Image (cartoon, rainbow, N blue to C red; front, side):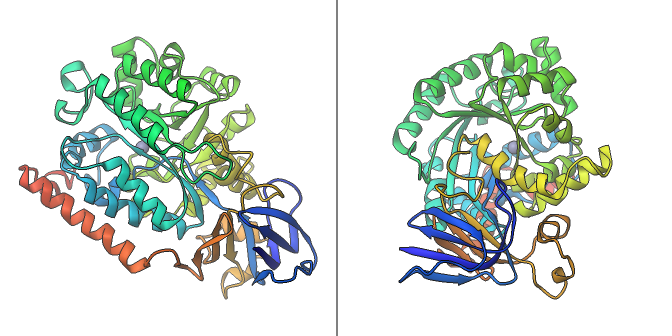
Length: 461
Ligand SMILES: [Zn+2]
């Protein structure tokens, strides 16, 4: 089956931009693109892209989908205060909460141009159903590529960690469950819709042994590694006090720098840290809205790029970024970098590259997604930039990045239409949204049953 998108402006991220041209899709791949009228392909489906900008589908490289069910809590807290307040709420979640939260969260992502998302899930209360499978089920229904990270915590309060002992797991249980998740779900193929990641939660909630054993497991299985790192100054202090090393040096000691690793946040980096990330090919997921919400700081993104370190974008969990659209993170990144470094810190095109190719590199998929090129998967976002207000901007990439996210005419994943005219096509949009609301109510109710009065206790952090 062939599909032609015609009369469309194209920002392919790799190669020259096209003012008005076409993209040809055969099966799940892009086979041709260029300027001018589309070729005559008998029997091909056609999408008129007049007034639209085609970009690669956006790639989200850090999220905690379950957090959709706990938005708006601990509103004025630091990261550590926020975590301590919320761990007890999250401890009550079950597979039904995760399914509903993931349906809403992934639907929301697709509606902001996302075609591939990771999800870092790290709390697995016992006897509450298969939480890992619940997220996967939601992703299959929505139809975007999914890189679920089997997260973990084994360093509770009694071991000097931050989380209460009640939400951590035993090392052996974690390693067995993680191996099982990889064996059950990981698909390494080019067109893969699902790849599993190994992801102990953070230096302040995972033991050194869990970090090193996880790295060994991931490398034996040929999957990628992810964790939170250098998010706040509190973490810096914690690492110095507990391990005698700052976060990046600690990761280096544990064998956690390399081209198969990407970290979430990396806000507080020294020059030497940036050099180490660049030299080892270690990626970062920049989550500016979450960093802003929690007052964590502004990452040195433009310096990281200048030194050759890879950066992708992430919305982070909805409990710390609320309703952040992934497309909006391009603008947030641009504004943060310019506020910190001046107007030449980051261009609109660099911001678009972070959200696409940068993300694809974090996930190890730069040969398959992240740019519009013949041979790559047909993951495409078609932004409507001819609206009554956005049409005033002559440069469509500027309209996309400098302003609020424009409406989406289409989102295609492997050539399949997931969003059409701003509506989810694979599932009922209303049902996905309602599932998120229900998940929130259910989580608060389950927490109440355990004596945790979430709204009252953690509202003000
Ligand atoms: Zn996070």
